[in-house]
Image 1 (cartoon, rainbow, N blue to C red):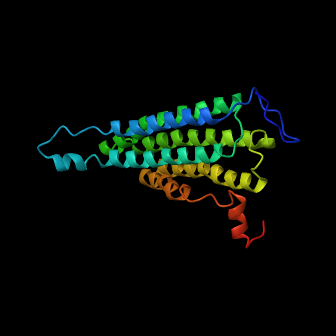
Image 2: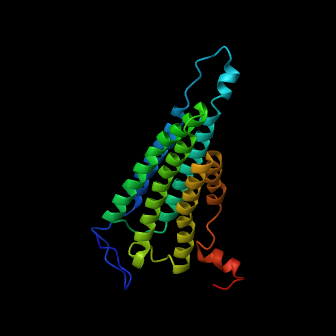
Image 3: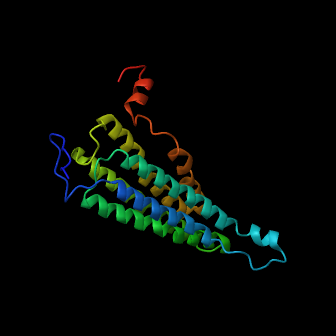
Amino acid sequence: MAEPVRQPGTAAAVGAERDPARLVTFSDAVIAISITLLVLEIRPPEDTQHLIDSLAVLWPSYLAYALTFLLIGQVWANHHAMFDHLRSADGVVLLLNTLLLMAIAFLPFAASVLAAAFRHGHGQRTAVVFYGISLELAAVVFNAIWTYARRGNRLLDPAVDAAAGRALSRRFRLAPFWIAAGILLGALLPILGVAVITALIPFYWLPIRGENARERRRRNGGRD
């Protein structure tokens, strides 16, 4: 197979470059399993004589399930957005992506800890910080993949221009700071920390402004 054509002035990637399609497929599978495991953390109530009350007290589990499901879904959507702009993946990307998947697979446990703390009324601060750190690790590694791939355009698709790269970078790098704010606030007031982290959900489902040239021309009145 012919070696991918490098752009002039780009740095040589570490190790052999591979089509990222298999990496994305494997990532989809791990993310799908992780997101499915979330529901297994919701235990059926043992007291069926007062079933409505027993179901109602599980609200922290429902909250942790919904929050984590949507956050993992965002990682999945942004993972696709990122790899849609890569022409290949090398050994460093494979390693970093493996670390990202490891962090994602840990989130169902972090969600169960969060739910248990709010359900029992003890350790909420620690639980929110623990949950936030778990998300922070995923966000940091995610950004590391994009930063490495974009540096010197070493792995970017030739069709990706500088403006699109900057638009994606702005979107991706906000998450670690946002989650860090949630961790700090959660250490003081747990419910506020959860609210800040929850605010990531509507923001990250918005379209990425400036991701493609057509959208930029529309915003600039036809001027690129």
